[in-house]
Image (cartoon, rainbow over all chains, first blue to last red):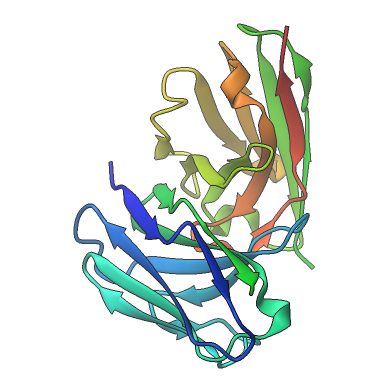
Length: 108
Length: 115
């Protein structure tokens, strides 16, 4: 099974800060990596697909990069509405997928 | 508009069984693989099971393998999850999700395993 190691598990940052979350796969998953945002009481929202592609309608301050085993998710300038938990997800060996453990982002 | 409506959750004793259902509409159901994803109270997302478009390929998380069975009925636009030998750690909100690059989620059905 492919394991996803996401870090950090929580993060506190100020409005305007650049925020970075990483996700490491236990084996090569090419670019089959997505990033989701989940706000309390809501269903997750897809932000980035295939490692670096921005979902339609998602603000450009969100970005993703990486391939193989190491991936990065970045918010270039943190906004108050970005407070949420973020998850990576691999889908290299369908129909099995795996989520990372999540990163809870808070405002400092 | 895509709609995914789960049902079948409830309170069950350890060792018991439940069958979850997901009624899908607003898209061509048999064009998509489907997933079940759960979230325990205060915890992260956990993928539970997935099935390809025609049911010919299925996958399970290690935590549920041998106890849960996913299936689908394309004629009824429905997805199912048969859950046997339930444990306290299976307590969660269970979401039906369209595909594996998931753009659409149901609101979930709550499963509580407690004596």
